[in-house]
Image (cartoon, each protein chain N blue to C red):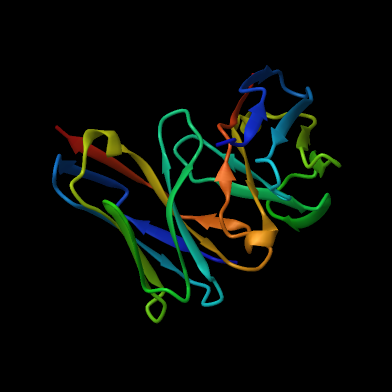
Length: 114
Length: 112
């Protein structure tokens, strides 16, 4: 079965640079969630989109922005990167039409800021 | 917001034994409780879930129980195998908006 696709899988950036992470949800899923996971920590919710509209916002820094496009893929844009932004970034998708309960996670993007 | 606590943080069992991981949540409005297995360098994999209108659910060697009154849910793995070794996260879905609140994780090690 098709899964959530994330690119790139690994990204190395320097402080103050920008980064763009991409997420392609499972086909026919209409909702995308972004989570950040620090080393040895649990995933923390950043932001979500349903039908291309922002549906919920968590602890996402103002330096980060995201959107969902007409084909339902989503991009997380991160500017003025800081050392503390180094983490795993996961995208998850679900289908609200099926009550939207199950969230399926992608393999993640490992961001390293040096 | 929701607060999910998970215990234990580490769990070591012998192959063939059972493993139990427990979680509590704070928001009585939470209505969905998934469990994820995360292997090193991989994304969390949904292994089982339970909704608030159900008390127990089983899928082969894995079962989850929910006590809404006590705001407590548990993961039970029977006949553990070395490939069950991973970090397990419980989570709660607090509202119709869908965000998940995770526990801190349990590192399960199954010794052959």
